[in-house]
Length: 154
Image 1 (cartoon, rainbow, N blue to C red):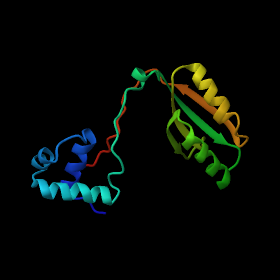
Image 2 (cartoon, rainbow, N blue to C red):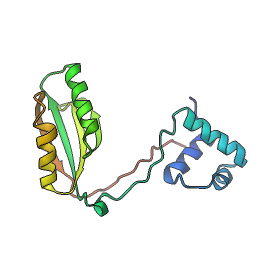
Image 3 (cartoon, rainbow, N blue to C red):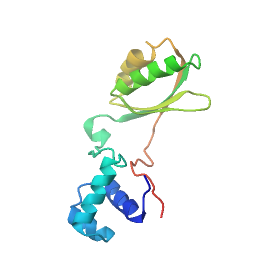
Image 4 (cartoon, rainbow, N blue to C red):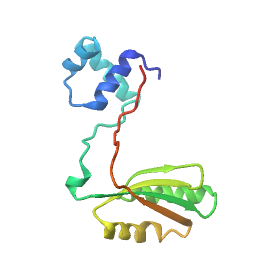
């Protein structure tokens, strides 16, 4: 699907706040409300917009520890990767999981309440997978930038 400048403006605004009224959104992008509503519906129907969520502050919910976990698999085999992707996708502590190139096969962002909760995650998810050669964990000291916005250009 090709995005024009108006689509990009709509998406940029909706990434910042999807609670904006259609009338206000239409005014900001220079469309009539019905035309704006039609564009947003098309963006949803074409899966450019894939969801609407509320972003919460993990610290205020008790999840104060963010860890970056790099995982190296034992071998480069599709079935091992598939199995790990399934396990990582189901683990509620994993907020992001990327299959990567380089020294590690996967990079995960794990958010937990404390180090004991992370130990339980390690035992349940990482230590039970015989296909993991090794993993490395880094503790986040501070969040410098955390956004869900995708830059859409000018």
